Length: 133
Image 1 (spheres, helix red, strand yellow):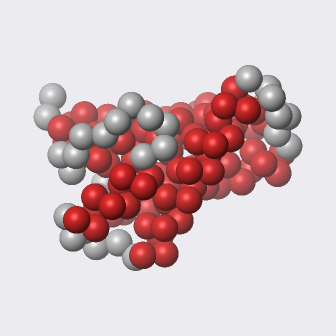
Image 2 (image 1 turned 180 degrees about the vertical axis):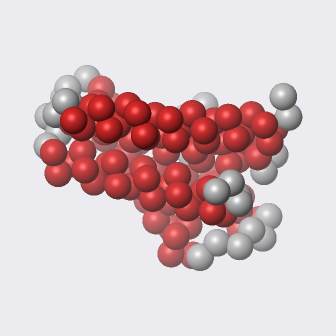
């Protein structure tokens, strides 16, 4: 597989997680799982984008800062506010991932809906930026 094919597969996997797993977890009131899967979808989406762009990424959960820096270096057209928001979402979800995973915090429906919305935003924007619609 080429970098582009691998990147697209990562983004497609993130989309399936978003459409299937997050929706089912929300329906089942499993809010901690919604948070975890939202973080996973964002991470896979950003790593897929980096892969498509031929950029190596570390094996960490938050790569929003790397994505933002590297798209600037490659002169890819993206609104600065959107780029900043993607980075903030990646950071926020990576920070709450662990507490949701180990049930160190019980997340509310509102938390879950926000995580779902933010993940959807990242997937949608990355697909637009990379013309994968």
